[in-house]
Amino acid sequence: MLENSSRGVWSLTANAKVLETVDSAEVVRVVRALDKQDAPRRRPHDETAREMSEEEGWKDKLSAVLTQKLDPAGFERLVQRILREFGFIHVEFTGRISDGGIDGKGIARIHGLMSFHVFFQCKRPKGSVAAGEVRDFRGAMVGRADKGLFITTGTFTPAAVKEAARDGAPPIDLVDGDELAEKLKELTLGVKTELVERVSIDTACFESP
Image 1: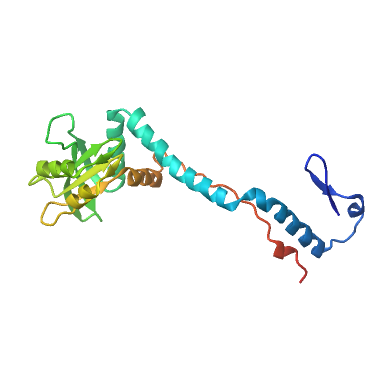
Image 2 (image 1 turned 180 degrees about the horizontal axis):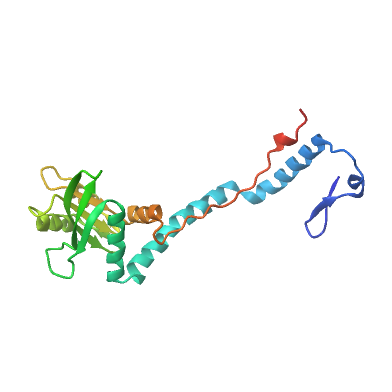
């Protein structure tokens, strides 16, 4: 019915070309045989590992762009855009003026009813933000804002996360590099999501009723 040429191209044999009807059982048999031949080459585990690597890789590339290629002014504009997209009605950077580690301030509007004055700090380290930096930021904002927002392209140490949520202290929300990447992906700001077409054969459709 089918023959494989030296070039790896499957084609109908001479006998198959003159058939007037299609034997569905034969079609199923051939398709299943081809699946078995391709199975060792597909190696599902390797494909899954490759997909996971690609999933993690785009965040690494984005981090490199944000920390190495984007200048400070460009990063400020990017943060302003993100905050406005997520409900800030006013965003102002003051980081060029020494203000105890505060880089900017804004007003966040919640559901169009409540507003909060927020001070924020942005850092682009290669490593982690320590608890001391979160503590210093809180000290600079106490009595001047309702909330704090600390954004980093890196990560926060466990102690920094604990410090940000310390009972009895003004709350500070943390956004690390991973969450920042997800926000940019959600807003399609410099991050595009491509859908990959996957083709599979449903052999049940060829089986006789």
